[in-house]
Image (cartoon, rainbow, N blue to C red):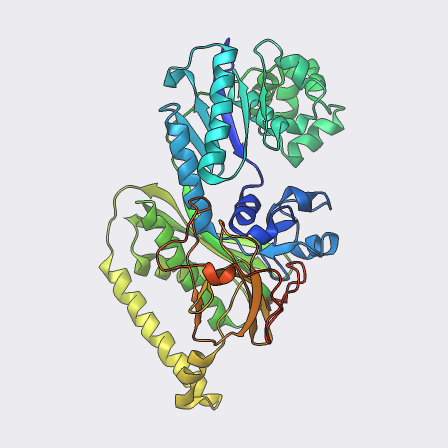
Length: 487
């Protein structure tokens, strides 16, 4: 434990939702929910305006819509969030070489390693300046906690939300922690909390009073001893600059249970390719392939296979994922599929035999698909029908229009897509509706949240129309909350 609060914890405020509000002037000050938008979607982040209605992270989106029907429900734009995160992490690295990222919007910083004097006033000044720098560089706010240990710094940043700074002075830990629920302590999840509740332990103070021996009896030596130390406010974990990922994975939840075995196999192959993309982006390879299957009844199965050596070859990982899928019964319907790679390494070991085998399987699958199309009467017209299928426009997606410039999808359905034309630096924009096949409308890229002007070729001038203008034919001026169905 340090004698001065020189461990800093930064947590951006409602990060995904706040980034969307900053990018979309018409949403500022209004409830925004980011996450899965389908019937089985889950809330990733809710703005503070939405939280007033009871919306929270990990809540089913359907429940959130009932609680807050007038919120803007948006699909996540991770490319934007990564851009903002990189700016924030660069600011943290100017403070110290020891920065431990926990996620895109959260990190610990060892201020002493950056030369900050071990005094409360000095640490507070650095924290306040950091908050100003983040707002200036991104337009977003972050909450800062300062303490002599990581656990306490994180508790302080939570207490500082939103857009605040809290310092826990060394020596005041037990007084502060005492009345808090035991779930406040790291490593105490629902199962551990229930075990402690049955023993009559509900708060941090009661955890400390129980004693180390009792906690070890209840939870085991490692967990019990660690929990007792934290209940006393002791946490000597250092800030670690590099946190090595243990695995890389992707998964999708489907709006309708998948019962067609060919479709399930195709989704697994697609997920395997996405997983390889993330693996290569991280400069890693892996030797253990894992698939995850959640059935119609919510039962979840995982299967894994360890390869002869680490690889980032998509053919090898696809083949392993398909082999694993063959061991799972999916006839009842599949709700969720996932593919992951663990046992990560910094080098690869190619397997040409596996690649050749997968290429043969892909060719066989293509022949089977053609045969199925012929049996259904599609014949040679099937490829053309695929090309004519309407494009999907998820709410919140960036778009460009040849005439109106940059904007974002407000909603879509029944062959139409509604777009609000505005940029982060414009006034709230007007809304227009187009056919989903409109050749003038195309996907765009996220614009910077600050900068004061449009990016290359993404002029937004037509989006900023005088409010006195009357709607033109085909123009929709409804509120964001009256979002069209995305299905």
